[in-house]
Length: 401
Image (cartoon, rainbow, N blue to C red; front, side, top):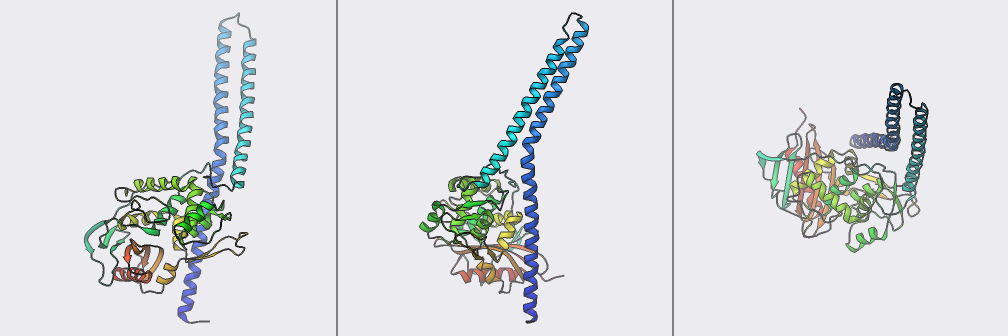
C-alpha cells in the first residue's frame, strides 16, 4: 500500500491531473464555441444584407403605388417591374451567399490541410488589455541572507505588495523566462490547439545554431499546436518556441513584434524589449525581474498558460517520427516539490545565459491559500536557483488560520 506520505502524494497528483483535465475540457468547449461563431458570422452578415435590401424594395414599391394612385395615367406595370427587380436582387444575393459559404468551407479545409509555416487565417485575437503593477511598502525587506541571487522580487498577489526585493528594477537579460511571454502572446491568438504545424528547417536550425535546449521535434514533423506550447515550456524547447511563433504570426520576426506590442499593453515597455521568442542573449533583449513578475501575473490570468506552466510532465501526440510521443518534464517543478516551501510551488519557468546566470520565475501558494510570485536571476547553479526560491517561499509562507 505504501507509506502515508506516498499515498498523500499520489492523491495530490490525482487531484492535480483531474484539475488539469477539467481545465482542458473547458478550454476545448470554449474553442468549439468560438469556431462555431466564426463560421456563422458570414452567413448572418449576408442575411442582414438581404433583409435590408428587401425592406428597401418594399419601401420603394409602396412609394410607387402611392404615386400611381395620385397620377391616374401611370402605368401599373412599373410595380411589377419593381417586384421583378427585387426578385433578381434577392436571387443574386442568395447566389453570393452560397458562393461565400462555399468559399468559407474551402478556406477552412485549406487551413486544416495546410502544412506550411504561414500564420493561420481568420484567427480572432483575444488580447487582454489589463495592466499589472506591484508596489514596495513598509513591508518590503531585503531577501533572506541565504538567498544569493543578484536580482530578486517576491510579491504577494492579493495585495500586490512586494515583500522582498533586491535590484528588482535593474535591467537584466531574462534568458528562457522569455518563453512565458511567448506562450502568453500565442495563447491570445490561437483558437485551435489541435491544429497541426509542420516543423521547418528554420525552426530546428535556429535552435541548433544558438545551442538552445530542445523538445526533440524534428524537421518536417507534424506536431499539434498544443504540443508546441508544452514543448516551449517544460523542456524549454527552442525549436518549439520558434515553431509556435511562426504558426501564430507567419514568421519569428512578426511574432516578436506582437511580443513587444504586448509589453506596451502591459505598461512595461520602458524597461522591457524583446528581440526573440526564445531568450537568446542580445543586448537589446532585456527586462527587469519586476517586469517578469508582471508578465507572469498576466500569464496566470490566462487559463491555457496556467495549465502549461503548472505541468510537471507531458507526453506529446504520436507522430511518424515519434510513434510513442515525447515525454517532456519541467525539472524545476519536479525538483522544488521536494523542498520545504511552506506550501506548493505550482508554476515555474527557468532560464540561463552567461550574462544572467541561472534564473527562474515561479508562482506558489502557501498552506493558508495566499498566492505569491517569485523571480530571481544571477544564481550560481540551477540548484542554487531552486534553493533561493524555496527560501523565499518558506520565509513568507503563512500557516492556515
